[in-house]
Length: 279
Image 1 (cartoon, helix red, strand yellow):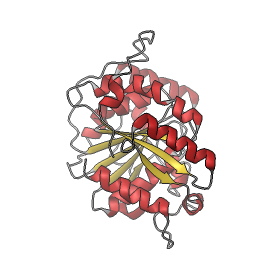
Image 2 (cartoon, rainbow, N blue to C red):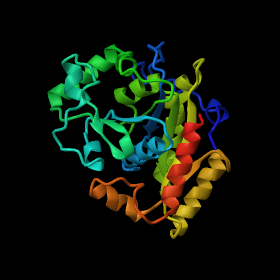
Image 3 (cartoon, one colour):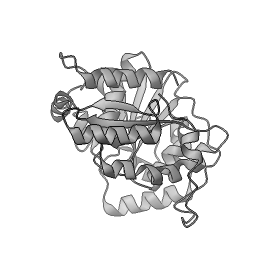
């Protein structure tokens, strides 16, 4: 159910894009862990929720997991029930500090690196730094001492931004997160253009397309799912069903996979974890 290079080959890179918008991948310092990036053009598709669930699900498979928030909005601490002022990578990076002392306990034994609180000036300073140093994230990951058995799940901001490109430079796998709606379907082409340089490099990214929070009680959602299947093929995508129990768990800072009830969404997440564990 992993999409292949053919899905991206027919879409050219937008020639009007500036070098800053379409940076070319560079040779990164070695990071032996499996790095999975959650990406989307649109906001509100459930990337942070998915990052939380994947951290728990992959940890349950026996793969040590670090969930990394690469988003200045600093919302991931809410999902893990961490304090809002939890130490994060944003200020530490500006102080040229290592990240190994910043990990917080997550669900089922996984570790969490939040972005942390930063003000506007700090965010602008960090973004300037990241544009000048494409090795920034890969260097920090390589210094964490992660083995081939480790997984890193990276939650990135929506859209085309320096944080996403840092993550893609260090990634093995990208999961494109979408909803079953017209906006997400229309966003596939911009995402194709954005990913094209990374899919063309010698160690090309593996790519999953995920339709998240599918409501099978909605005829419109099912029609949009069919549109995704026509675009990607029957085996070109994954689906996670909508489940209010997952949202309720995260609202209270609980493990979304720890609820007693068996749900389609939990089965979907466990299935995606098994596929990511096998990549």
